[in-house]
Length: 348
Image (cartoon, rainbow, N blue to C red; front, top):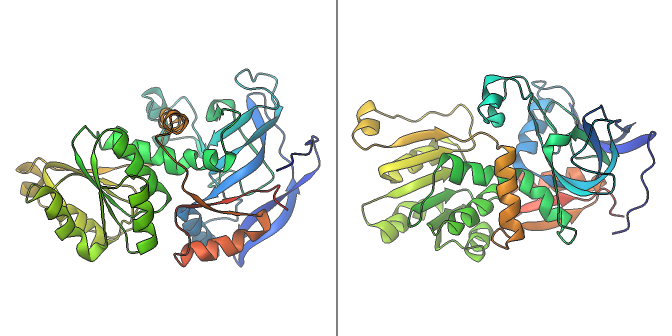
């Protein structure tokens, strides 16, 4: 892919979510603040969360926005106080832009920042030719790394690391059930395998189950086969960790029932659905019900290290032009995309 010079100033193309859908529009190109950088976006992952954002905008629950929180590209402009990267550097951008001051930031739980912002949520994101972010939110990339894959590390890779390692506390020999083998789920399978865990991947779609098998799942199952598949792997002992990336009442209840003594249910997605949990069920089984929200720069760096070592492989199955974003989103909603689709703004 050719990369023409990016002159400062002027306008850029971007996809904006509005009440009547996703539209390709012209916007002013961002300029960096003193500790900010501007990245020419060469790859932007399309996450299922983006669908939820689009639905919220259409319903009037959220203002119009430029989405995109999986971003990779090259630095084209830097503020006067930037010292971590230089113009021309290939980088991956983490969408979280924490304040660095609140109690959670001071405890290095920047994913729970009380005053920060997020690219693609309440700040313009990567469905654009350029994006602006804080210098502390980027990681330099090896020159040979595929930028489409690097972009996905910002969410699907880092979120999987946070869920499986930071929250789930996976250990060697654990039996990990990953419920939902989308982009994050396929990364979660691989992250668990790097800790020598046994992995069962659960998904409605045969294509997703096949992809999970290819990246290291010992066994795969449909939701209807989940309980039997787990028993075949663990008998009546149950799962040590269940990472639920679906978050419906049905998936959560099934996930809860598969937990073994001392097991940890890690919820990564969901809405307002509820499940019955008794105090005795938690107390006497020593089970833990945990939420895994977003990720930190430490998780992001871990995902990048795993990718460099060849232990976290690409799950990019579609590459498309920026103008094709509405079509990609429709295919994602219809379940026709396995892994991640990536927008490449310079693709012609």
